[in-house]
Image (cartoon, rainbow, N blue to C red; front, side, top):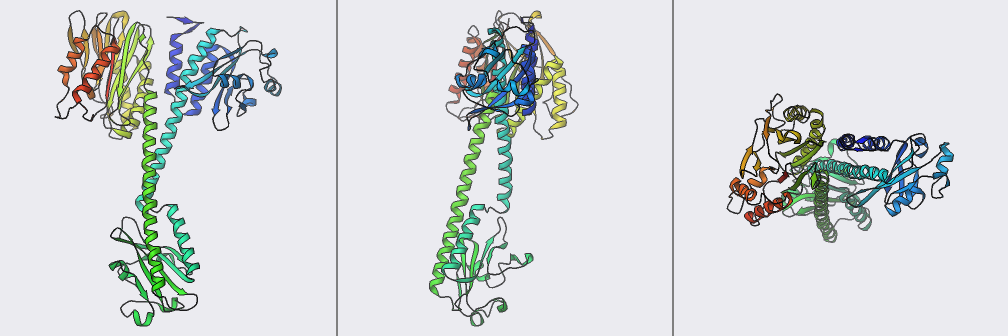
Length: 585
């Protein structure tokens, strides 16, 4: 196995798996720090995250003798080695720290630590600056070299993407929880705080302008036929009196007819209504409906003019106009809130799509001599398909292609969970059938959501020119034998992951010849529909492979998706589409 300064590719792969398997942010940061120290054999390491609002770096975690001094310290961009690294976004080697004026020596003075040499590299994710990764003092007193830069840059690139994804994931999770709370509250009341502010302003204005001593606002409770006192001015009631019966009392005619009620004299105008005159100082009041569309959603009441006079048509018109404005404000605010929620949902979906894109492995063009190509396309903003490649050794590689039942956010979240779970299990077992069995148990016991996932796990063993595979209810895959110019379907028995606790998975071993094509895919390709609801089908799929088998995997992939799009002819896709093509050696 290839060695890089005593560090094997297996160790690097183990670090990669460890970083990509960790979900909790602080634990991830610690893993990155420990990995940096181990990879470069240094006394200490630091991770400084970029604060865009303050334009400085924060020592989020520092390991080693001076870790306690540096924790939570801030470094302005452009100052010190880390700050200069951030400013130029390029690595910096310092092999004589004591005489280098760029080094911030006050950290050493505060901690009593002596920095001999240090290396800083930027952390980037999708060309976005995330922070700086720094190691100090080689254990063997050697100078840092360009090889160290390459090693630490490799770790920082991997760590930067992982950190970026974790933050996006946390933001999405938090936003999903917020949306759930908004949905629950809106179902019960649909009265935002902004509406309360409007109501308070209207009640205050009415009291001051019309000089009214007693005001009340009755609002229909969302989703019911019940009315409740939302605001009271000039009086109070017990909690059990807040509920208003729309078929009883002085406001019943307003609720039932949607017409305003002007009472000049309680004793002469309210023969048919029950009334408690002892509660009022005068004998006159007004009740006007609040109408949205054709529905009465509330009533605005005014009583007890401070000058003791009766209400007249002027006050009736004023209050009717105010009630109409209140209804318009309620509609406008609710509509605005719904629009904001939809926009927020759209942004959340964009964030989710970005997380999915970043979480899928970017396959190199060539790995261990095997030429590769991959393509993932969700039919909505986010989807449930995924693929992954796990490098075990120069002669052994695992590839998994999977399809989560369902679409949208639930499938996307389940996809992330399943992918993370499998990426941790597969390297431990190195056995396709055993790996799927363990993953099935974990998914069944820990999710209980009713969602399941089909998967095909393939392990390529180059030294033996064979493929070991196991299927969890996934559609048949393709091995194209170049010499024979023959398509061979790859399949194995096994239930989808997450349906039954005790499920056995059968392993199948298939020998191959160098140059053969391995095509792994989800049924979003073979079952793609056109406007006539015809399927693309396996015959067309096979023809694309056979006619282009001599081309590079990336060229075959491009042709395959072009043929699917041509067949669909603009018809909306109804499933995610994923494919991985490998030229075996």
